[in-house]
Length: 93
Image 1 (cartoon, helix red, strand yellow):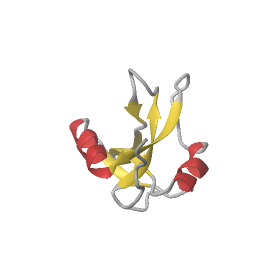
Image 2 (image 1 turned 90 degrees about the vertical axis):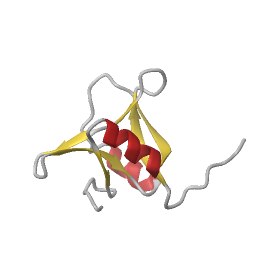
Image 3 (image 1 turned 30 degrees about the vertical axis):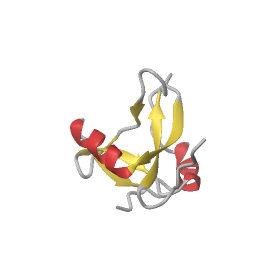
């Protein structure tokens, strides 16, 4: 098994309904009037923030590691931005 190196090019994101019908957890920021995918620099920040993130009832969520370029491409195709979020859920970048 090849282990992925987690660094600047990799981020943590939550995936809704992992498997056949999966999608990234996307949110809406009313103050900036934009849809975004929250991404985290490390697993600890993601886990600390998970309970405070708004989620759709009945969906299962899983934390996954994604390459930032792949995430940006997928987000752009679907009308989303990628926002780096801290452990408290605040957008930092």
